[in-house]
Image 1 (cartoon, rainbow, N blue to C red):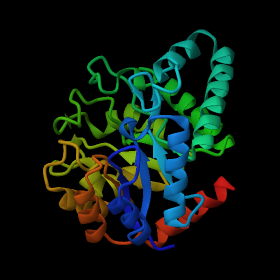
Image 2: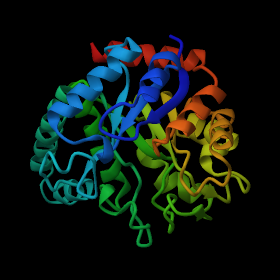
Image 3: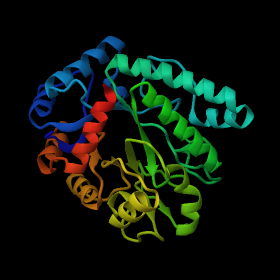
Image 4: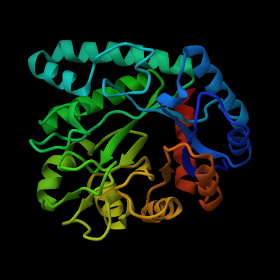
Length: 314
């Protein structure tokens, strides 16, 4: 399984000739789709089929961020107002109704995604809300209560997996304590390791997720110099050991403003720190080429975990 350690993105609703050549020859690990790529059901099916044909892989990882409401790439095509926060509130009122409704919602969503050729949805968000959590998380979180976040996150994964769509837990080791939006600047969190472990790390522990996405956050009491995505200390000691995450670790988007270097440096620093795959979301073809040419092939651990992902899809 020879592919580069990157998830790329594309510019429009059709593949350009250069994008086709990149997919055929350079073999990125996956492709993530955004609203700019999605016009109609037929168009999306045609696009994903072509991606799989070019990569010679019917199970090629195609991702989407379909969380609901403010983060819904398919909003023009499927009309619903469900959010994680809605389910979190319902859970406190009627646990049985909540779990049944969540199950039906995930089942319906997965049916649409599979029909469109998409096999990974980057949910659930396991960030625990605080009174000062940046609005970029907001309704994307299940709750201010860590146990509700953990339980509904686990159920979301269970229902996704039952319907042959992989989930991505995020933003590990936790974005809820941040006052800032990592799309715009580098957030800093100065909570003690014990407080982070008590609240923020809690929902991620014992997760059965096959994939996880990092937080571009500087936790000053864990690593004063590096955001989590760039931190060997945090990835090795916190994410892998204390939290115990055993799956594929994906960086958040390396073009976000929380990261201060050029794209290639951001990508290499992520991989050097212990991320298995980097995510690039801006869709610029020159940058896609620059990145895939600069980055290594996936390592043996990622090959093994990717093989497990392909078996899961059968």
